[in-house]
Structure formats: C-alpha cells, structure tokens
Amino acid sequence: MQKILNYINGELVAPISDSYIENIDPSTGKIYSLCADSDDHDVALATDAALAAFPAWSNTSSSDRSKVMLKIAALIEENLEALALAESIDQGKPLWLAKNGEIPRAQANIHFFGTAIEHFASEAHPMGNHALNYTLRTPIGVVACISPWNLPLYLFTWKIAPALAAGNCVVAKPSEVTPMTAFLFSKICIEAGLPKGVLNIVHGLGPKVGAALTSHPNIPVISFTGGTKTGAEIARVAAPMFKKLSLELGGKNPNIIFADCDFEKTVKESVRASFTNQGEICLCGSRIYIEASIYEKFKSAFVEEVKKLKVGDPLLPQTKVGAIASQLHYDKILGYIDLAKEEGGTILCGGKTAAVEERCKDGFFIEPTVIEGLNHLCRTNQEEIFGPVVTLQKFETEEEVIEFANSNNYGLACILFTENLTRAHRVAAAVKSGIVWVNCWLLRDLRTPFGGMKQSGVGREGGWEALRFFTEPKNVCIKL
Ligand code: TXE
Image (tube, rainbow, N blue to C red; front, side):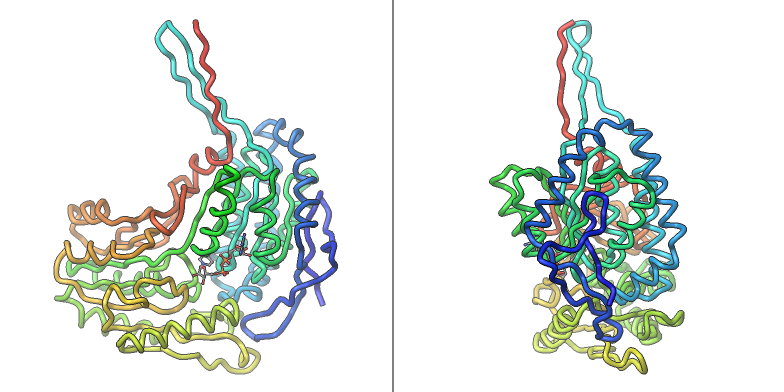
C-alpha cells in the first residue's frame, strides 16, 4: 500500500517511529494508503533543516525566489489531472470540482505570491529636512503552516506561498485526514529544484505534530486554518511564547435575501453557496434569511433546486455532492440533523444518509438538507455544522435581519442579495464579518484581505496582508 512520507531537508523520508495512520477514501470507506504518523522528533528534524536553510534562502533575491515558485506553479498545472484525482479520492469532493476549482487555485496561489514578491515594497516616512524614517521588512525565520482537510492543497498553498515568497523557511503540516496532495506537492518541489530545507512537510496527527510545531521554541510564527477550538488551543500555547499568529477559523455565515433580489440568480447562487464541496467550506452560507414577502416563493424554488443535486460517486461527472471527508465528520453532521429536529426544526428535504450504489455503497454520503422553523439563537443556528445542511428563516425588516446576522459568535463571511445599491452598502457596513459578497459568492481576488472577526479568527490573509504577516517590520530613523 502506498506510503505518504515526510518531506524533510529536500528528501522524502519515513517517520522516525516508522508508524503510519490508515488513510481512508471517504467515498468507499476503505483504507487506500498509509500516512506518516510523525511526532516531535520528526518536527525537530524538519525545524533544524529549515533553520539551516534560512540564511541562504532569506538572502536570495526576490526574483530568484519568484523563479523557483513559478516553476512549482507550472508543475502543478502540468500535473493537474493527477492532483485533482488524488484530491477527489482523499477528500470526497467531486473530481470536476477539484479539477476546475481547487487545483487551479493552488497553482494560482503559488503563481500569485511568486509574482507579488517582485512588487513588494516598504514605506518611507520623511520628516521634512529633519529626519528620514524607512521601514525594513525582513523575513522572520522558520514559520509553521497548519492546514485543514476541506480544501487540502488550496489552503495548504495559500499559506506556504506567501511565507516562502517573503523569504522564510517553512515547516508545514497538512491535515491527517487529507495528506495525499501535500505529499504529491513535495515531489513537485523536489522536481522544481526548491533548495533543500526551505519547505518541510511533516505528516501526522494534530495533537502530536501540530502541538509540537506550536510549542517549538525556534518557530516564532504560526499560520493556522481549522476549527475554532483548535485555534484557541494554539493561541493558548503560543501567546506566552509571544509568537506571531494568524488564525483562520470557522464560520456560520448568513445568506440574506431581500425581496428586491434578482430571484432566479439568487436561488441558483444560494444553492451553490450552500452545498459546494458538500458544504465543507468555511465560507458557505448556512443560515439563509429571507424577507417575509418572498419567503414561500423562495422556499419552494430553493428546495426544488436542492432536490435536483445529484449525490454520488465523486469520480462521476454528473455528481454534484460527493462524500463527507471522514466518518467522524459524517457522524457529527448527522448528529446536528438530529439536534435540529429536537430543537423543533422541520426537514424540507434531505435529512439523512444518501444511498450510493456500487463501489461507493460503504462511503459517507449525506443528502443536501434544508431545515425551517428554527429560532436564530438555537444551537443549530449558532454552531458550525460544516456540511450539506442549511436553515431557512424569514425576516420582516432590514434592522431585524442585521440583528439575526450578527447574533452569532462567528464573523467570517456574509452573503446578501438585493438590487438596491444603497441598501447593499448599508447592510454590508452593518454586518460583523470580514468578508461580504453582494449578489455573488466565493468570487475571489487574491489581493483582497481574507479572514474573519470574532471567533472566526485573528488577522487577515491575502495580498500584501499576507506578505506583511510573514515579515518583520523594522523602522530606521536617520537624523539628517
Ligand atoms: O479541524 P482541526 P478538524 C471546523 C469544522 C470541523 C471542525 C473540526 O467545523 O468540524 O473545525 O475539524 C491540526 N495543535 N473546520 O477536527 O482539528 C489538524 O491536524 C496544532 C473549519 O479536522 O482544527 C489539522 O492539520 N494543530 C475549517 C488542522 O489542525 C492541531 C476547516 C485543522 O484541524 C491541533 C476544517 C493542535 N492541538 C475544520 N489539533 C475552516 N475554517 O476552513 C489539530 N491540529
């Protein structure tokens, strides 16, 4: 059976303990590869390799760093088919989605920061003829990048690209649930000629590898995407060590639909925002608030469209909703559907496991689920389910829906549909979230600040924000 190895000091190596975690294909429920079950010893090796590589890498010119990154980006493009297939098998997402969305975005992440670094500049603050201040922005050292299982290569590259472009060395940990594309990526880095030790990838469990990275004294920067509870644990360990932290955590995003929306487009886009990637995207809109005058009309059109979504074998082109990433997560989602019923919710469609034939009969599939009749403060509407489950609720006024939208501890994204421009600006300013999409969803420009408020995280990724995060600013003041 194929073994997923660590990438340390430019080589693919077995974990020191030589133990492995079984890696399961969620569409079949069967073990299909073995993933390195590394520990603090492997993290120590990787960190030493990164430390040794840092002086040379941080001293290369930005154009040299750019060159090797663009080579990596080109190799991702060349290996699109293989990477997309690996991602679909490992994560459960439809193959077409990996091929058209996720892997191209991973390529774009590397390409974007590989070119951005050539344009990165710092500031000068002249004080007339009196003095001149200028800001140096230098690479920091060895940084840890910890990523989740929902968009594996996409989120992995989103972190390591700015870190490497800015001149840092990286020890990265992909999710143990979906390690395969990071492993294939390490082979790409070798082929592209990335100098040894610049990027190290250590596979394994969060409480072992992740915790060892978080507490390592020679890793002063941590960039993390994952669950809010894990983010809190990382912050607890990192804060007394004064580490620099970027935390991209969960979301429970409102999707606000006003009566003056473009109805057909709104229904279509809302279905996409609810169920893309089985709803396993922190940006999905899971609390759908609909203005009372169009509630019934929207409900029937939306449910009709959701019922058309084909749940099935991720490898088939007609599949719209694939498998849930793991048995653990599948059980969690089904638990939330039971909770919604206990809380008085009515299931309008879905609400149970989906039977998928043939090779996928033992996989983890759940029907896209739409629920109504719940209060905005109940647990179903407060906690992140992170699956193909949304709730519908009506509202009477703009003030009321802003209150609903802001009634949650998360504050990552908000989606709103209206043809009234003034209202769009007003509501966008009033909702407490780091990202607002008006009449669209997941339209991304990599230059924009990306991240959340409240329990959705600390800091912003993307564009200059990311390059600034991965550099240390130093002001130099010269008396003239
Ligand atoms: O995430 P974890 P899980 C949400 C979603 C999901 C929940 C839990 O609601 O149900 O989080 O998912 C590593 N120190 N999101 O359990 O555990 C872990 O190995 C350092 C939202 O899979 O947060 C993995 O690499 N690292 C999210 C990464 O952290 C630790 C996407 C994320 O795993 C660690 C995924 C520790 N103590 C889940 N423990 C989003 N916002 O996109 C675990 N890890």
